[in-house]
Image (cartoon, rainbow, N blue to C red):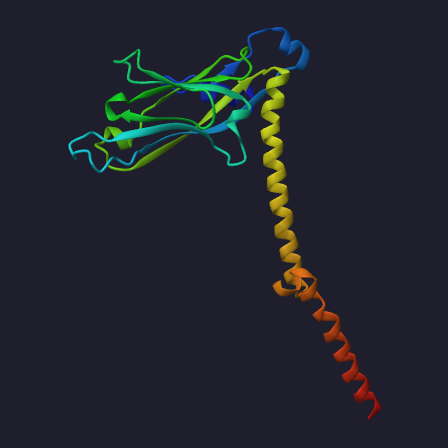
Length: 224
């Protein structure tokens, strides 16, 4: 991600601070300038209510922060996530200090929820997001809602770069492995191999016997 693209994300007027910067000037001089971004998902889901509770009780919600890529793991570089309830209740907050970064029993009046993310390297400034789900504000017209967003790291430390790159390597390895399997299956179909010939040695042993029968028939035809 370029610095121009970075500023485009940072200038969105929604009270969110998506950019985490390294606190120290020596990091740029040693490791050079670097911008790394990761996709995340902010979401909420209505919790299943107790059947013994009356219907007039307000439903509760679970609020979470997840990685935008299924191969990514926030636990590699996120230390804790703080969920601060409505600004009218400044002392009401919950802290998730391990994955999955999720809280429960959030009331509809607690939204919007301010989410602050702190990282495993304390020298990286925290990022913050304001989650305002429509599904809650519009009278519980649905069961869940998710919003895609970004974490942007400017000049992260060497340790932080390793944590971020490890998730990228795992993602690339998983994608490469999936592509390799697809190519193998496609090549097997092109040469006419059935699924039964690809499972076990017993299934494959029937092929030489078939070839021997074909050769025998060919020899009989020549002798005539």
